Every structure is written in structure tokens, then in C-alpha cells.
Length: 201
View 1 (cartoon, rainbow, N blue to C red):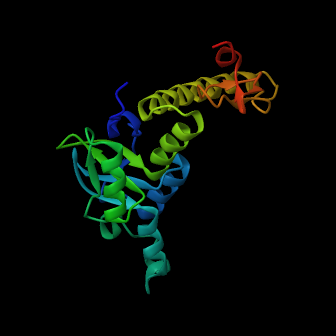
View 2 (cartoon, rainbow, N blue to C red):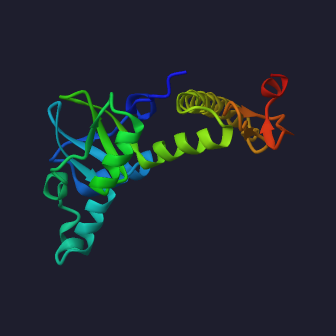
């Protein structure tokens, strides 16, 4: 099986875009709401910088930071140098680039426009799943995708359950260590917690 997994197979295709005129406080609130570390600063469709949580912290500790914070714009504090990687690059190349650039994330682009964000967490998740299941990198990515999809379906079901006055029902679910899906009936098999489907294989 092909083990040359590319960045585009692991990256998060949904990213937050802001403009230079957006307020720092509003953008920080957006980052917190989306539970992400970085937003891409766009001028039209062109990326011109990035705004990360550390940019806001830098402004906060500056001499005039607290007084200036309420009026500060993203363009004043953004980082103009964009740590980026091509979507066709391998995960190993992306790891090396993160290390050399001393960053926890990379903006993924197709040459002109950003197409997603690759974080250190994405790389760690892929590697951890691979070691835990003994699968190839490509199989790990596939399992990660299934797990994400299962999580989205679970979130959708949670809203319906809670709306009916009950609890979400996810307290007794766990992730199968082989296929990565959420299941109620995990059992230990050969040192792994597996769902019914994986135990039958």
C-alpha cells in the first residue's frame, strides 16, 4: 500500500480568514470560539500574513499594550512572514519545515491561495494512530478520517438527544483502537479495545 501520505490528506480544510482591518479583540474571540491557534490574514483572496495567539500576547505585554489593545487591528500585529507548505508535500517534509521554522502550524497552499492549515496536532494524531494500530501511515490517515466523520455524526446526534431533554449519551462511548470509530461495546482483544466489527475480522 502507498505510504506516501501528503499534507492535503491530513490538513484541516476549514480555516479562519480575517482582514487587516479586523480588531485584535474580535479576532482573539474568534480564535477561542473556533478553538484554533491561527487565522490567515487575507487581502481579497491573497494571504498577506497570519495572526496567531502569540501575536495577541505580544501586544498585551507591550508598553502600551493594555491601553492600545481595544483599538488595535490585526494588520498592526500580524506576522507578515507566512510559514507555508505545498499540499502535495509529504508529512515528513512538513515535520521538517515545522522544525526549521520553529512553528506549530503551517498554512497549506496550492501556490496562490491557502487551501487549509496543518497543525502539529494533525501530525501527532497521524503518528500516534499509526503506532497504536500498527498500520501504515496511509492506513492511519484513513482511520483518522473515519474517526473525524464518526465524531461529526455523533455531534449531530447529540443535539437531537439533548433537545429531547436527555443526556448526550456519549459518556459510555470510546474510540476503537483499530478503526478509530466511536462505539458503545468495546472489548479487550489481544491487548486492544476493539469494536464488534474489528473483533470479527
